[in-house]
Picture 1 (cartoon, one colour):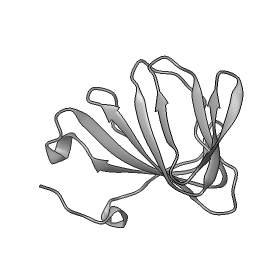
Picture 2 (picture 1 turned 90 degrees about the vertical axis):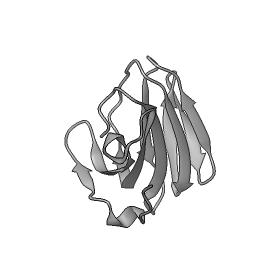
Picture 3 (picture 1 turned 45 degrees about the vertical axis):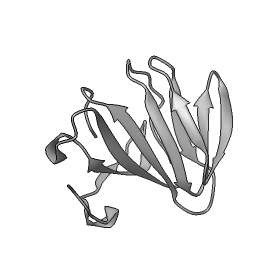
Picture 4 (picture 1 turned 135 degrees about the horizontal axis):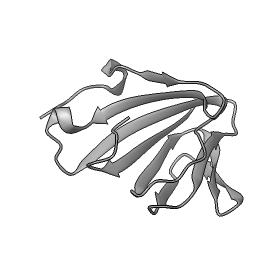
Length: 116
């Protein structure tokens, strides 16, 4: 069993042309004995965004804090704390922070893909 505050988990910073102001933390993964899924926490700084991309696996997302938008089929759909998002495999998507505070969201993926 693993019990830990998320701030005790090493952050990984992402910044570049396709991604801006993103911090990711691998909350639960293979190294914890999780055999079926991976849980990550992402924090997007104000004006931060993930890369627009597709992949074969699905995501389950829960927005914990902040405001943002998710790109879905050519449109930006608003997100706020408490919003859940299911992204099927092979669907183009991107998340951006549209607020003045960090956007925090949990992201679950199945085993197999890179964890972070």
